[in-house]
Length: 127
Image (cartoon, rainbow, N blue to C red; front, side):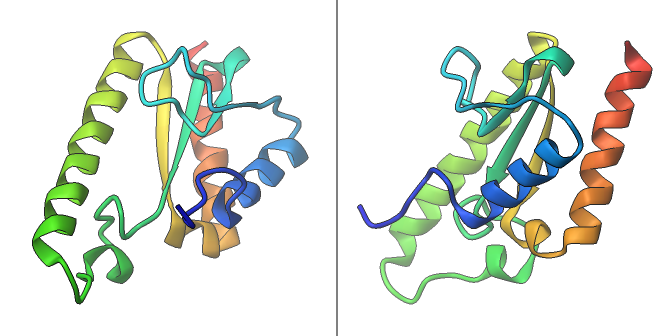
């Protein structure tokens, strides 16, 4: 209950970047598969911002295991990863471009901005 899903640090960083670059955002679009955290409707782009430990990201934090209830958390995190795969597939089938940003990526501003800039530029070339 204490774990927030909205307005987390990584989400605010991504939101600020998008605003600074002049992109108009919509938050948590319920009509899209996986309810992406940030949606750029005009560009048909969806941004999913994940906590590394809950989505088994490849970084150190994503690969560490909790000390208690390990079996429960393994099953839960594996289900998160599978749900993420289904949501990404469904978004792409609907013609949306999607990018997943890990919590660890949001900590390195230059790398994050480069990655987001490249993602948005790819969309401009395809239109």
